[in-house]
Length: 153
Image (tube, rainbow, N blue to C red):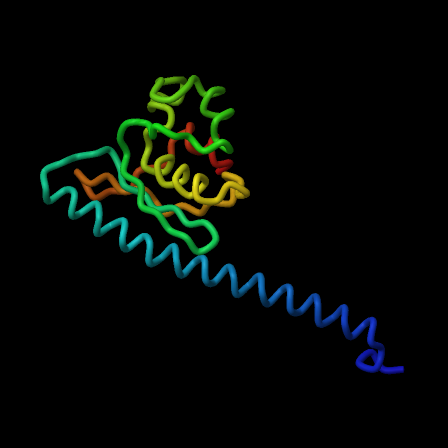
């Protein structure tokens, strides 16, 4: 019997191939969204810089096709349930800890928190982030330790 004549093997092969192709297509779509979002983040940072305002950073976040641009500032008034325990473990909103940045105030946190509030079944590590940009200089700002801990990066 040929492999192609065996429905069990054929079905399994199709399932594996379809799953692999679907995953690859999904990854390409996510990468494309992140590239577009990165361009929007750069434009937003430049626009903010032109106004003379200078927040620490602007960053984008993507989850399941939804995108958000976050701007660093005061901690959000509502923290997504998925982030509440880690925020408390890090010292609570707005506190400076060993990472030397205020907890829950970064652009990444602002954007990621918003996506998690919109997607209660999601987990923080599912969120994809653009590089953060400092509007004052236009340079990339590395993700801080608080955000790495909060989003498993």
